[in-house]
Length: 162
Figure 1: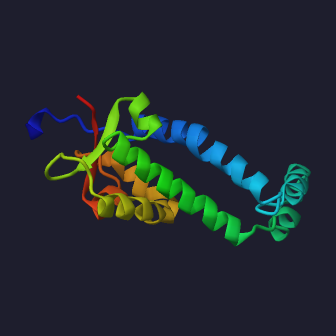
Figure 2: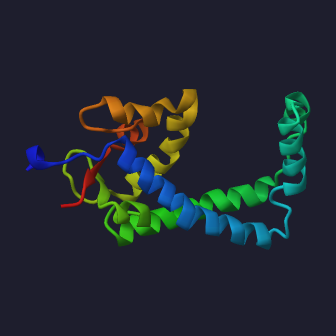
């Protein structure tokens, strides 16, 4: 059975992730921004920084980072984690983006549904995959089993849904 498995590569996973950002994370961010009454992220400062950067004043833009409320940021991150885990449970290892491109997350050894522990480990593993210029994600393109660092940490794999 394992020889018939088609592992999902970098670009298909990228498309799924982009779709999830667009249809899950962005709407959630908008809701939390309005719940915070605008105190989650200072868009006015962000706009000033963009204008400074476009005018060639990168130092000014970098020195005046927008203020952010960690309380609302934490609410956003936990909400994304919980919603993602709910989709993984409901759709057997797939978020809407993964479902759209017909891929899913499975246990790397058994190819069965992932456990809650694997889901949590994998989600936290995204942080490690982001470090050092996103190398944890890029490694998908160089491995035969197409596993990213967060997959290795959680003992998961992303495969095409048969």
